[in-house]
Image (tube, rainbow, N blue to C red; front, side):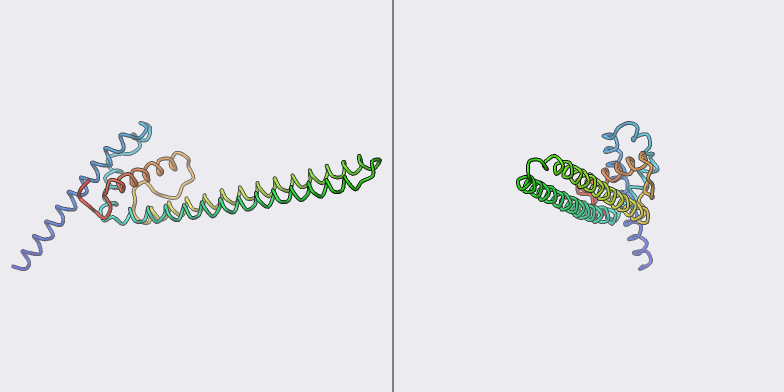
Length: 198
C-alpha cells in the first residue's frame, strides 16, 4: 500500500512540475513576442523549453537577483572611483591656476612672456597627465565590467540556464541580455520559486 501511495505522490509531483513547465514556457513564448523579430527567430522552442525547465525550482531567479545586486554594487563602486579621480583632477587644476595667478602677480612685466610660456607648458603637461589617468581609469572600468559579464555568464551556464556561456560576441551578448530580461519579467510577474500562478 505504501508503494502505491509513494508512486501516486511521485506522479502528482511530476504532473505539477509538467504543468509549471508549460505555464513558464507559455509565459516565455508570450514575452518573446515583445522582442525584435531578429531575436525572436534565434529563440527556438527548444531553447525556451530548456529555459523554462531551468526556472522551475526558482533557483535561477535567485541567482539572477544576486548577480544583479552584485552588478549594481560594482557599477556604483566604479562610478565612485571615477568621480574621486575627477575631483582630484579638478583640485589639481584649481591649485595650478592659483599658483599661476600668484606667480604672474609677483612677476616683473618684462619677464611675464617667459613666465606665461613656462606656465603654458606646465598646464599642457598636467592636462596630458590628467587625460592619461582618465584613459587608464576608463580602461580599468571596462575591464572590470567585462570580467563581471564573464562571471555572470559562467554562473548562469553552471546553473544550467539555456543560452548562457562565456562569450564576447556582441550578438550573443545581446541575446543573453534579452534572455535575462525575459527572466526578470517572469520574476516581476510572480513566477519565482516554482509558483504555478502567472
